[in-house]
Amino acid sequence: MSQGPILIFDKSALQAMNPDEANWLDNFFLTNITPIFYIETLADLEKAVHAGRTPEEIVGNLAVKTPDMQSSPAIHHSKLLGTDLYGLETVVMDGRILRAGGRVVTLDGKSGVFFEKTKEEEALYRWQEHEFLDLERQIAKVWRRELSNVDYEETYRFFQKWFLIGKPKTLVEAKVLAEALIDGSPQAASLVFGLNLVGVPNAAQQQVVDRWQSVGKPPLRQFAPYFRYVYLVDLFFNLAIAADLISRDRSSNKIDLAYVYYLPFCQVFTSSNKLHERVVPLFLRQNQTFVKGQELKTDLRKLDEHYSALPEEVKASGLHKFADCPPEDTAFLVTRLWDTHLPAWRALKAQKKEPDQSKHKDLIAELDRIEHEAQSSDPSARISAEEMQYVTLIRNVMRKKGKWNRFGPDVK
Image: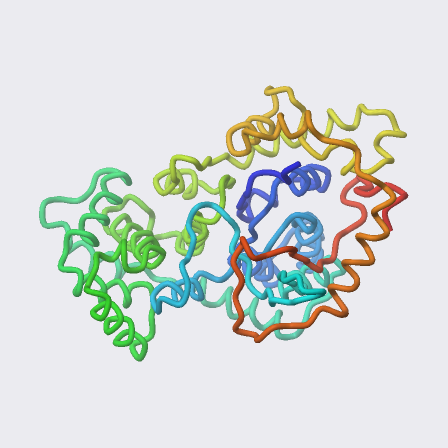
């Protein structure tokens, strides 16, 4: 059985959920957690809070709600830009999660990929216990200070000069203009401007230009598709600011927009942020869905009520026994999202067989051998999905989230 559609959430969506609702988010979706979410969460250590709660409590409570069982930290978009621009590897933009840090290992002649816990996953585990490094506190201070100093006035004046035939009147028009400027301008000039706009260091720009020339000066959408996408997002944002379609008075707008850099790496995006509600649908592929945070929260609450009505002995068996897929009733939004993005799940459920319990010990022993005995390949080694015979991930998973014991007594 599949583990659910790939979903990206922003901080506003998760903040609105209680731990019981967050439990079902983690249970029914594979979540791709963006770097901006970690930074925004950490930055709350420096945020003024009310009602007697400490910043440590605020961050700790959010860390508890953060998916830990079916989640992966996303690769920072700047690293993906480098990979794309230097032609190191194809940046796949079809909705799958790109996870960093795996090493190719071999055991008994079989090759696979082994993923250690990432620094982000280790940090969340500490934050749940209200433990923060001094460095993290300093990062929070710098983040808050930089956010308070954001000024869009120069951007506003500069990009107003680009409206030779009038300002865009809608965000759709702003995106159309941005695409026309990127793809319709001489590609050499467009490339250099884009490199500056997305923040590629000057020292690296000539290397990128040389590579573009060496491969025949193709259109940017062909040369570096992910770079062209981020370039489009940034140019659109600046044009929308200059056209008074996005406020220049809200300093956090650029931060909110950074979530859009990761939109190619999910099937579902959810947020309660007003800017996301207006902008994200403009950048969705046809096979992606935007869900308002409140709508998802409401449905997760309905799911919680649905499963809470089960007999106690059923609930005690663990989520993997009684909730490895959502209810078949399409009155649930989560069920409809599974139908849209995983259309084969119902047929797979009908064919599902009870696992052979006698093989569990053998499987655990095999996983232990992979962790401790598998031989690592050269750090630069790569392996294709077709060659992969196993993937192993090490992660910290909470045994209980909200009121739910996630695993039955038979699971160590």
